[in-house]
Length: 374
Image (cartoon, rainbow, N blue to C red):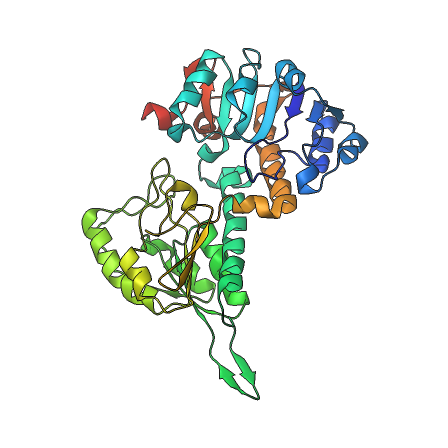
């Protein structure tokens, strides 16, 4: 089996799908590894490191795609690359199939087996394969650092000869993986942190990190999907949420928003009116910028000043820590591949819950229950 790793072509992307150490582990299992020259350069993994592990480094991107049995990537390669892949070959990367129906059709037409890492089910057995959580963890960490660097004040309490400076107040909206890491990082930096999530069940996790959980009266009984993600709130719940959050937002120095709904535009959590009521010099860091933003005034990829408030809409934050992001991503892939590679060959057991949910297309057919609606 020939396993290939391509150089990423997306804007702002510095990660690589497989690190030299991970490649070495697969080579020990009898897998032939081919790496596109320069694939790891942006994440500080030189070609020579891959050669040292026994991988072949090649310059011909076309041949890389046409000859492979399995292609590993971070983002979905461009259509012209996918059209070079032979029928029966496999692609594993972030596919975002719900948002990209044309990509799914192309994979079906080319008879490429496509596995989307965003579709790995959130069950205990799949935690080591959950690349979405690995990358969200990095994004949450970076969000707290961005908030601290954009704020024109201290985060911790400072006792000086000139007087005592009170600690900054940080509000984190959304207590998933990214939110929890943002809470932990902001606390380590010395801020007073509070957090809100539509799922009351996460209150204990928030408080275990030393933050205060903001209580909003629950109108909806069901706030979480079967997959463990936050469920989109009803209009009544959104109205109640906005009323309570407005008061907390306007007294915060930093607001970090992390709420995403799989396959849909990000919900609006911070309205323009809320931003208008924030103190001059306050900061909003919107981690949902790539999916439309949780803040009404966010401009994806930019940091703007709105009524004296700095609103950051960073993109692809995981890529800003490309060395460790690639390391974690590669480990997630190795864990998934341990389910798929048997005796040096790819096998797909669709009775396995992880394989079934992660596989989007196989042999020209849609496999994913998410896309089938089952």
